[in-house]
Image (cartoon, rainbow, N blue to C red; front, side, top):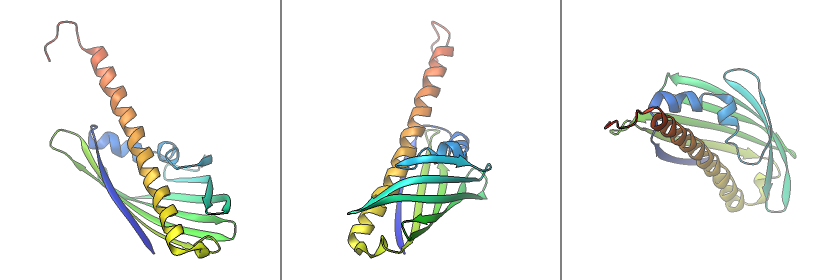
Length: 166
């Protein structure tokens, strides 16, 4: 099993971040090299993604399900699937906490098991690629949330009255 983890801060209140990370359309769009996204329910989606490790390139079909462990604070994404004779099974834990400035800290931890021909390409190569993909997904998530934050700030500025000293 491989484990990857990280965190980031975003200038949005926790309920807004929670709404984003529990929306399958929003979370699905953060997956790197996404070719197709099919939302099945409020907690499940399927994704077709392009993968490549060294000379091996192809597509993986992934099924993702969100389980809320504590509303507006923590949840787990279960990602399973495969392609090219290989399988991936990932569990990603997301934990949100309030920051002093009214923003949110998002901590994440991903445990992944990869099997089949892709896993046999060499531990270090597959580990680096899996880490890169996982970190890219969370970088995409941070970028998407930053965009939401900027839109919220712009909307707030547009609604302020001229001459306001707030």
